[in-house]
Amino acid sequence: MAVPEKYDAIVIGTGQSGVPLAKTLAHEGWKTAIIERYFVGGSCINYGCTPSKTMAASSSVIYKISKAEAYGIYTSKTAVNLRKIIDRKRGMVKSFREGLEKGIKKTINLILIRGDAGFINKKVIKINLNDGGFKLITADKIFINTGGHPVIPEIDGIDTIDYLTSASVMSWKKYHLTL
Image (cartoon, rainbow, N blue to C red):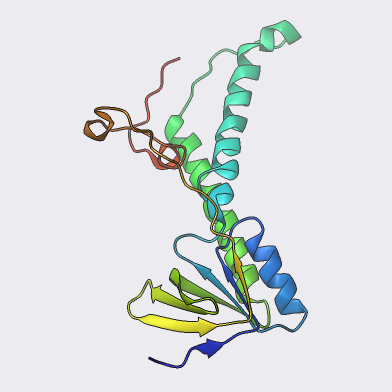
């Protein structure tokens, strides 16, 4: 077996607490690795808080326009361009994700490793790298910040339909709009 690369700390996952923890440890002089399987930012930035609140903000504007006459404001025409709302949401997610990744990359003593992490033993992590191959790393301090994922209930026939989860709805290709 290859000799693992040594770090002072390893953080698995770049969600809400993983990045601040990794950056703090790095600022304290700890050689720190942060591992991410998919997109930097965890569920909040990628399919939770940021995209849902961005779309909710658009909904709020639509609602306020629909009540404008109560405030003495008259509009001649209101149209909703769902594609622009979705594009705005995607742009916000991309901006937040890229900003977070830039912050990680410019932090001294912190390295971002892209891949799927698994324990070999209590102090050694094997990372199946996204671009192929694997890497072994070790540290005395390992923090697991892997977050959560939707659980699909055991319902007869659910595997035969195209269902949505809290994660998949934010990237769904078939948006329907009824006003």
